Image (tube, rainbow, N blue to C red):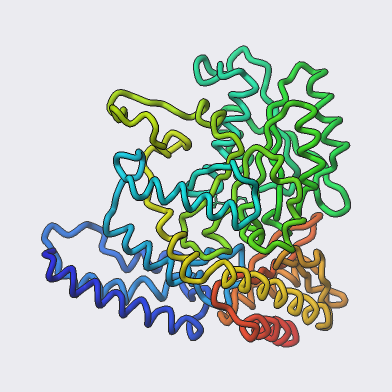
Length: 467
Ligand SMILES: *Cc1c(COP(=O)(O)O)cnc(C)c1O
């Protein structure tokens, strides 16, 4: 492709993109595609010769958009959002064009220094004290893995990275049952193992019980295990549960344990001062992960890991082979030394565009609206016949169940969800809470309106009444 053709197609794709975003409300949120449809539309073998861009693009239009779940659809209320504010998409186009490997300062001076500044902007935005630093990772899973590696190595006085874990007392990690599966996986990958991830019971409010935590640590010490760290949940994925951060951190301080807060989703809400009580005490933790790529609007991938004292994580993850040395640049930050992967994208640019294009006040206003509309939707669903709110609003997430008289409520709720998602006007997903099948309703899409939220409620009522 020559640059004249690149110019033509860049412009066409820019136009297509705007049309796509404009048309989202008219598309079904979840596509009406069956498994196998897309692979059947793709040739079995790759072409030997070059094909014209016009043909490639025509096939894209024919095969792809109609078979996508539209995460930027304003009536997407499933999972958690993966918001891509248009300003962040533009930054991403620029980053993609420069296509830099941002592993070292030398390979990406602007990306590295902008990352440092954006981490500090976000630190201020969520109200963490001066002195905290951080790094932008691809995902919360990677940040949590980094934190768990640090817990492991700190507990082993950095012997694990030399000689492995054989012969060592098992490092033990503590978390509530409401924490995300990425914590389990990080324990697998870090060689700690599922059996050494201790799930602490929760209190009636679904936050970790500090007394049960203390008891578990004491029992582990008595059994010859090696308590290493605690993962604290703020805004759990299932129902938005929050652990009592200050109480858990104070247990950790007494026990000498490292703490990592998983606020992957709810961290975005911390830009609103009045919501920060949900993680009060966070400034006493060691590590915090929050995904601006979820609720805030920086398009995937953009996961910030804040670190009170990066030295311990650096000691656990920094490797400096000869070919990555930068002679004469000892004072610069090389962010790949803070994380598991070496290669890294220029992720700070989309934060810079996002924060400037909307202002913190514009971002706060969206989050406040989402929470207010979620409360309205919760009240409206509670008033529908046969419906019950199972967990009430945590930030902008609540769960409900459909319990028509004389029917199995799990089956009725699952059948209703399938009808809602087949209908296409909105999209919701399920979880299990205390053994019961429930539907999650999360308001958070960047450009959704109150009307979109209330339309979803109407669709739910209409489809439930139709059976
Ligand atoms: C989404 C989520 C994760 C995983 O995030 P990734 O960035 O996809 O790895 C972890 N924890 C919580 C609480 C989440 O909501």
